[in-house]
Length: 107
Image 1 (tube, one colour):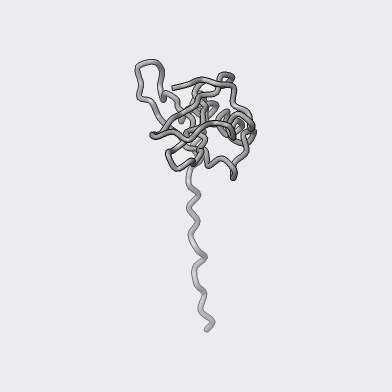
Image 2 (cartoon, rainbow, N blue to C red):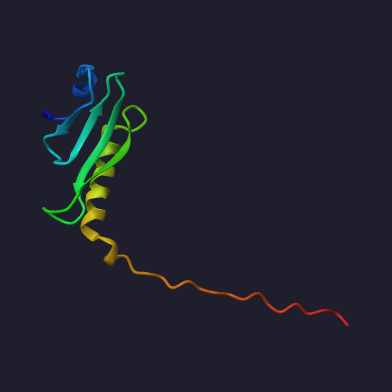
């Protein structure tokens, strides 16, 4: 998989391949743009969930055009940050159970 500096002009100039190809960003490891044979360009993030021995996960940010390169990079940074924080850092909020007031019938 090729590694290039992703810019708007570089993404526009990428050729349409015969099979899916991912061009990885040289500045952000794990962030890239996937190009399909139909010419569709989609921003993706590839990361590991728990370290070197864990599974690779792929997160699709969105299609190029609807999502700008800057928006995709910000979204990729959020994915990487959420991976570092993990589920244990998010405090669990206990559910507040409210009971409706008793119905008072007029007599």
